[in-house]
Image (tube, rainbow over all chains, first blue to last red; front, side, top):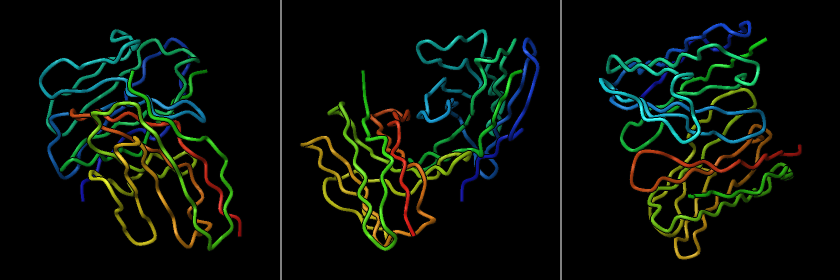
Length: 113
Length: 110
């Protein structure tokens, strides 16, 4: 079946540094991928839609200059959290749609000290 | 603003009983409805999806959709301790984006 893989699964960084999270579709081509963020005991909130070969579409309230999304190929989308701060600590999850079903990556837990 | 509402729980159900999870949504144009299970610290995994009014059964799981009442539910029969998780209702309205509810935390009591 379709598999979406994320890396790293967890990362700890110092405040002010940048962190890159990769999302790969392993056995299918994904022209569109979605990036979600989930704070503890809260639901998934869509951050942005990543479009292969074009700019990402950000949801209202999400800073595009802080959360850089690159979708340079049909199997890879990256999310870079720039100048991370403790309030950016969260669970970041990517996903892709195949046949109308949304498949999630394993998620990446970011902790900013 | 499109909303998906769920009772956050926790919902406690004895092992072997039926667990009933409910979800309401605000957008009448919603077309697709999904139930995801999320274990603590893990990403969601799809349990079922339903597009048409009525019931859809898959093993111990039954999804029920009532578009007139803007209501979708998930029934889990013969509940097992491994069913203990947070269950997320998600709704899609035409495009590929899903709107998620806040989830219901289910605990199956042995």
